[in-house]
Image 1: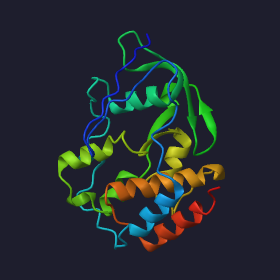
Image 2: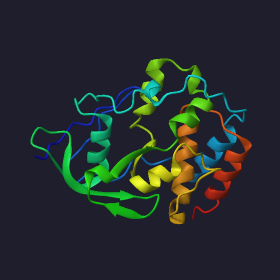
Image 3: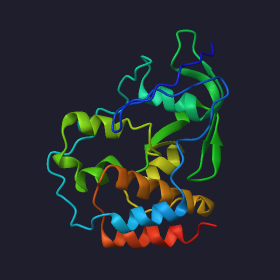
Image 4: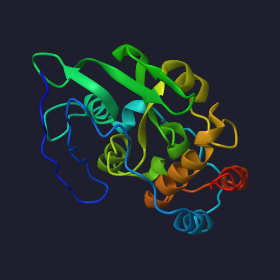
Length: 210
């Protein structure tokens, strides 16, 4: 059964409820214009990565319940899918199709449509999230306001893992521009640090933007 959920804007760094329908928007929130992203990249603080002491994915409370009583994962699947049909009890998609920009493929099985964190949780931990409160880490792990959560095929998600752009780039080179814009913007919004290698990789991919 298809349901329409009202769009609810919450404060920055908080969870948001997105508008969903059987035929969805099929895209995460867009990044700012290229010129703005370049300024954001230049404004990032370059620093040595923090140690991974006490890191767990559970520290970010991912896929928590959104204000619509569905999980973040379920809302992203509905937001970014095409012709999504929910199960009779709502929330969980029963069918649909999902485009994975990382490898330019489309998956039609719900189980194969994984949700990737644009800035990996482990990278965020090394970039300053280790000092955040539990509430802030939860907001980051479930951030639907910024281009932090996107559909990825299971193979591309596994390939990326916890790597940053200096260690991994999308197989789909046509997505490099958007990938670099999204990654840079998320780091800037959340005031996460970066490394020289990461900055260089992002700058190279931004140069592919038309």
